[in-house]
Amino acid sequence: MCLSATVSFTASALLTAGGAAIIVKAVQSNWRYLPIGLMPLFAGIQQFTEGFVWVGVNGGDHATMVWGAMGFIFFTWFMWPFWIPFSVWVLEPPDSRRRPWFLAMTGMGLVLGLLLYIPHGFGTDWLVVTVNRDSLAYENSMLLDQFLPRWISYTLYVFLIIAPPALSRYRHMRHFAVTVAVVVILDVTLLRYAYISFFCLLAGLATIHLAWIILTNKCAEECPELFGHQSAPGRI
Image 1: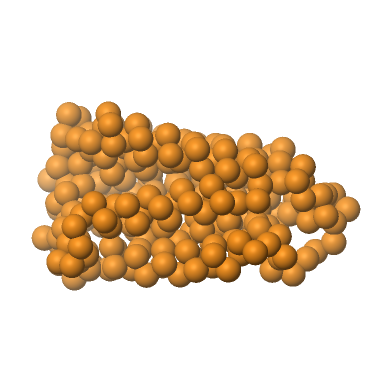
Image 2: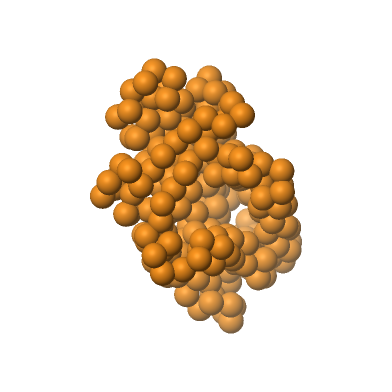
């Protein structure tokens, strides 16, 4: 989390413990929930790595800071752009005409995530972490900056995390898209001084929305043949 190591590790413990419980519920309810059920756990692991960024920054330990930051941006830049469309693809009914689009977005997200993340491993000068207003600010140089204006890269990123749930068959996944859009708007308008860190904090909190969808089996309201208690295991 963007405020301190203590807060980051505390948030990590809560999200990880809660995420583990959600995974159990997802498996018990319907395996199609598992990808979105993993997201609170991923958010907890991400907050854990940011705790080590604080440890490195506060202790002047550059290696710990870089290790933590590389773990943190692994989720920020690599995981979320492809995991969100993949999760929506898994949830979508087999006969949905939208599934090929979600699979295509998954592929786009994987390519974008690799381009955004992997170059940072080639040289630590690509990753600079500073403390701005008592919050961590990640000042990234990106490979795509050589070819595209930064705003295009960010627009592609936002599209890939919002469009898939917004196009989902399930009403409550579309509501989740609204939650993510609100996170992006708050981050861009109010928290730009440490936008990457705050975005991941708010996105981690947004996964509570997914936990609610799983705990209440909301998808069964619109697709009882797949998510009803008596439904048989279906094909992907």
